[in-house]
Image (cartoon, rainbow, N blue to C red; front, side):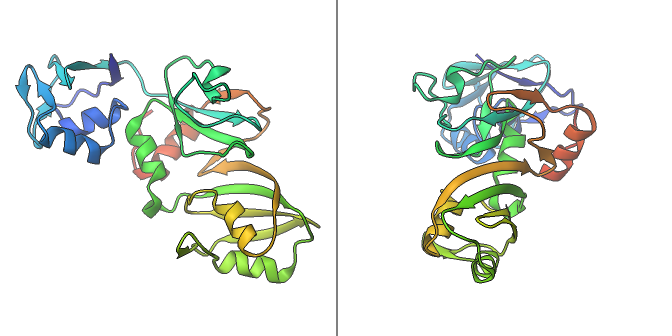
Length: 246
């Protein structure tokens, strides 16, 4: 059974938002499922403009989607070697060793050879907003490469590098040590930092995400997590799209 935080609204909540906040589907996928007749409200096929009121029974492909008390988000320090996959059967999955108070999905990814901050949530809509490339949400990393960082390298990285048939967005890059730099990205292409470095004849030997939006990795150790609450949560929701629920 799926579930989500129920917001009491005088005129109900749109069916695509209901499914999105349940973490079942994104808004776009929800619209597709609705158009395909796969969603029902009280046994009746839902339309794209249908709304759900308290007490309504919603099903997706025959499975009930029910409300729950709250939506939660956690900051997790993904250790080196763990894989971002929803399949806990994978021996290296983050969910093989991580037990959270509620079932969650990860927001974005870190590859197996990278470590650091990973956001985990049961709030499908928040996750969707954080991952939209057009929203330009910041992610900050500490990176060490296999040879000295030069002024030319920093300039090229910051101006944009041609990878994956596109040019990366301009970004902030600051030298931190002889072979180390910090970089702030506002997009999330596949293995972006590694590919950018490779295009400039550098090889990444260490990569750690230390911030996403206003959330810092802070004092977390590998394998540890903390719940994001209070002002920190309100600010994250504001950044994600003006949703200051808490």
